[in-house]
Structure formats: structure tokens, C-alpha cells
Image (tube, rainbow, N blue to C red; front, side):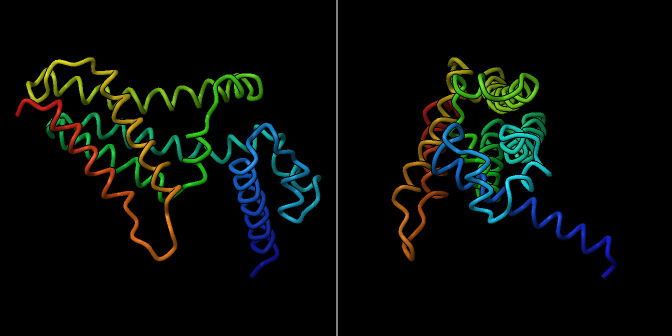
Length: 209
């Protein structure tokens, strides 16, 4: 291994070490209560090393959340645009994509689920805050588009499509939180099956056929 390759790996390791520590503390203590000193202490590195890779705490938070949220947003936009597929199938695909996002990057999911507009509007830079809000709003918009298509095509009863999308989204998040609080090591994990069951119930309630 060359010197440049070794340095690159060391850099990647440090960044992961910092991000993992930050994610743990943001989740346990909250964004506001967590300091760079806390992060450096948990990561067992100097505060200066943290600042070597991240300009600020909000820069660190953004690096944890934005890439995964952006990927989810693109997936949901793609699914919403599958006009040849029935709205019911597209909703299930959108929920599956969101669950995959949760499983593959639980740190980002948990940080997003705890997003507090009143707090982050004061702490994040305007451009970062606007971008995160745009991505989160877009995700809800894609569900609304699918529901609206279902109404127009006669699959769903006439409902407020935005309200219906919010119900889908909040049901998903509520089940994740409820089941996580009751997970026991070695016991059956009901998260996926409960989500699937809940989505079927909602779809039955809004479907005409």
C-alpha cells in the first residue's frame, strides 16, 4: 500500500469515527446539547482533529443527514414518476424505499425523525436548512402525487391527497418508533410486518377497487 493510499484510508477512518460519534450523541443528547468537545471525547481524538474535517457542528449534522436524504428523495421521485404502474403498487414501493433508507442508515433516519424546525432554523445555515427542508418536503410531495394520481384514475376515493400522504408518512414513523421501543434481543422483529399491515389497511380504506 502506498503512502497516499494509507493516508486516504486513515482520513476515511477518522471521518467515519467522527460521524459515528456525532450520530450517537445527537441521538442520545440532542443536537443542541451536544458539543464538539463531546464528539471529540467519544471519538477519542482532539477537538482540532474534528475541525480539520468539519467546519462546525451543523456542518457535521448536515454531512450525516443530507446524502441519505438526497438518495431517498431521488428514489421517491423516480417511483412517483412510474405512471404505468398502479398507484397502489407505487405507494408500496415508496414505503419500501423509505424502509430501506431506515435500515441502511438508521443514524440519518433518527436524526431526521427528530428534526425540530424551531431549533434548526436558528442553528443551521440558511442554505443548508433550505436544502434539507426542500428534500423533506419533496418526499411528502411524492406520496401526494401518487395519491392524487390514484384519485384521478379512479383507484381511490376522493380525499385530500396531502392529508392522505401525511397519514401514510406519520403512520410509518409512528410504527418505527413504537416497535423500536419494544425491541428485545432475540425476539421477533415486527417492524416490517406491522408497516406492511398498516399500509394495507390504509389502502383498503381509500381504495374504490
